[in-house]
Image (cartoon, rainbow, N blue to C red):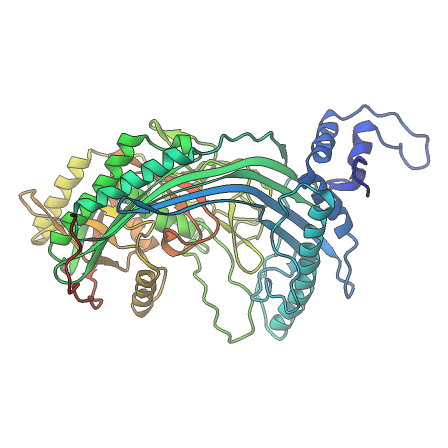
Length: 611
C-alpha cells in the first residue's frame, strides 16, 4: 500500500469481515439480488477517519488484515491483538537534598497477542506460552517516527514471532496434557463485546523545574537526622496514549497517565536492626498531586517515624485482639483481599513438574462467606473521588479492550464474583474488564480499581479501642495491639522481600504479608507504647471472616501496583493506580511474632557532619 491511499482493509466485526469504507458508504445488497442503497453509518465513517488519520491505528489495521494469512502447519490464528503505549516519562530522584537522577524518555512499547487452536483450547496458559526458541528480530518497541511502513514493519516482526511462539506453545501444551486426565477443563478464552473508543488525547507536560525543586527540598528533610542511612524522594510521571486493536473489531485510543511521588527513609537502630518507612502519593496527573505544604508534611511524617522507630523497643510474641485503624485497614484490604480477588489459573506443565505459582484463596470460594454478614465490597473503576479525596483507580478500558463495569464483589459477606481477564476461571467465565497489567504464560493480570469496603454496622473508632481494652481485660492479657500503618506497598529491599518469602514458605506457605510499621501496645489504662520488629503470622483471607467490628471513620489509601509481591516500590516495568476506601476493623485473635533476622553491625565511623 502506498502512503496517501485511504484504508480499505477489512476490519473484523461481529457479523464477519466488513470494510469500514464500505460500511460508511453503503454495501452491496443480498446475494442474488440487486444492490440495495444503505444509509451511511456515521459511527463507521468516524472510525474510518480516525484510523486513516492516525499512523499507529492505520498500521495496526493493515497488519491485522495481513495477520489473517498467517499459516504454519495448518494452525492459523483465530485471534490477534495489537496494543501500543505511546508514552513520555520523566523521573527525578534526590537523596538528602541532592538530585542524583533525572531522566526523560519517549518510547512506544508494543505488545501483540496471537492465539492458535480454538477458544476452548489454545496456546496460552502454559509454561511454554511465552517461550520462543528461535531468533527474535523484533525489539518490542515501535519507532517514534510516524512513518507508516516502519510502523508496519515493527508490528509485522512482532506478529511473526508471536505466531511462531504460539504454534510451538500449543504443541508443547498438548504434549504436557497427553496421558493426563483433566476434570472439567475450562476454556482458555472467553468472548467479549467489541469496544470502539477513540478519544482525542491532550496532556500538558509535567513541569520539570517545579518537580526538581520539590524533590530536592523534600529529600533534604531526611538530613535533619544524621543517623539516617537512606533519604530518597522520587517523582515519576508517565503520560501517553494507549492504543488497542483486535481481530474482533475493537478499536481503542485513550489517554493513559499516572504520576506519583515516592519517599523512603531508613536508619539503623542501636541493636543493629534496620528500620524504614515510606509514603507514596498517587494521582492520575501531576496536577492531581498535593501542593508543597502537604508534600512537606508527608515526608516529615516519614522522617519522624524513623526517629521514633529507632528509639522504640522491639516487640514480643503476641496472640490476641488487634485493631487496624482506617489507613492500615485500607492497606490490609488492598494487599490481601484485593490480591486474592484477582485470579489467574495455574499454568499447564508436564506431570510432576513444580511450578512456582501463587494461587488465590477465593478461586474456589464463590458463594461462600468471606467477610462478616454486615460487610460489602464494591470495585468501581468509574469513581473519581470519595469523601472529597481523589481516587487513583479510574480507567475506561483494560489491556484487552474490555470496558469495565462496577462489581458488587461481596454482598452481605458472601463472595459473588472475582476480578478476571478474558481467561475464564472457575465460576466466572467472562471477563470483568480487570486485565490491568501484563502477565506471564500468555495471559494478563487482573487488579482492583477503586475498592470500597462498606460496613452496615459501625461505631466510633474510639469505641473500638475501648472494646479492645475490655477484651484484653477479660482475657487477662497485659496489652492489646493497634496497627496504624502497614508496609504496603513495601518500602523494603529485594533482600527484605526474599527473606520474608522464605519465612512465609517455612511457616506453611501462602503469600507473604507485609510487616506492620507503626504498631502500638495498648494497656488497660489506655496508654500506648510504640514497638518495632514485629510481623504477622498466619494472617490471610480466612482471618477476614472473623472481623468483629468496623469504625464509622474511613480512610482512602491510594497506591501504585506493579504486579510484584507486596507491590514492592521501585520494582516492575508497568504500573497502575489503585485505591481502597475502608473503615478501621477489629480482629478478635491475630498472631504477631518478632522478626529474627541477623542484624548487621553498626557503622565503625560516625556519619559526616555539616561544616
